[in-house]
Image (cartoon, rainbow, N blue to C red):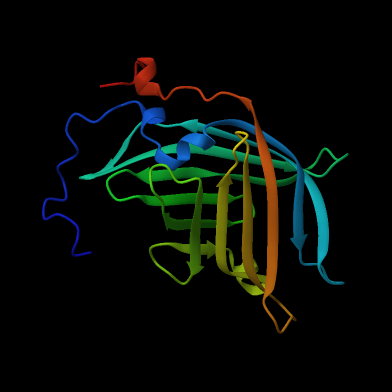
Length: 215
């Protein structure tokens, strides 16, 4: 907290509106992606179940965001996952990836339609090809919030996501969520992983498109 300036209101003057040019390590994630070899290890009454899945992720640049002097560049994302041969959604998730060029602060917000949200944090250099974000239950800054039922039956204590940018332009992730499942004495390690390839380029953010919303 002591590293923050006394002036908490004045925003960055003459900021660069081109988000794609200022995303640092997130630049490699911009676009539309698909992965067909996802693996999910999840808890069931009879024990851990390993399932395969097909994933589509859209990551589009947003305009620069200011918290007073703090300047963030980011991507708005939507994750949609199906099981092979099925039409019903297996997992849906929305949120933002954010990066602060001045400090290397990296953040991921996430929300899923089962009543859970989180804000995960990490640090990354501008040219990093591997980075990680984490969130912990009970923290008021980078934490996890869930419905009463999820707290009762599938309490999420920790979330860690590691991303690796591959030399062929694809990227991979390994996600580990630590759950306390009702009736089980030991924490459950819920794992998801996949490799995604680009199927479409990103759309430039509104300010660089000359959006009529610009004031």
